[in-house]
Image 1 (tube, helix red, strand yellow):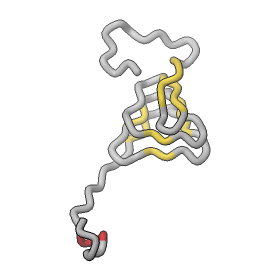
Image 2 (tube, helix red, strand yellow):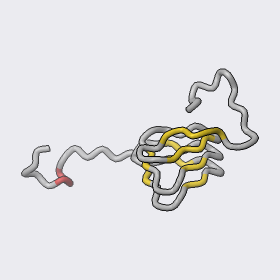
Image 3 (tube, one colour):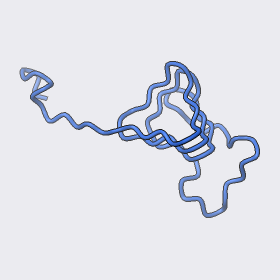
Length: 83
């Protein structure tokens, strides 16, 4: 906004995407600005990730939703980022 001004002259907010070690990102997945993909997590092909992904979580869909934890990972009771 406003529509009559070129987008480059507007208040464009740029945020970085953070992908931690061991994370797997499927083909054509879209990760929105400011999102963190936790270590060892999996993002399904074609997913649109709009929120942070917890470490060792598996997410997929549009928008991406938590499916389950990676095999062999047991989340702790006090994990604030669960799902």
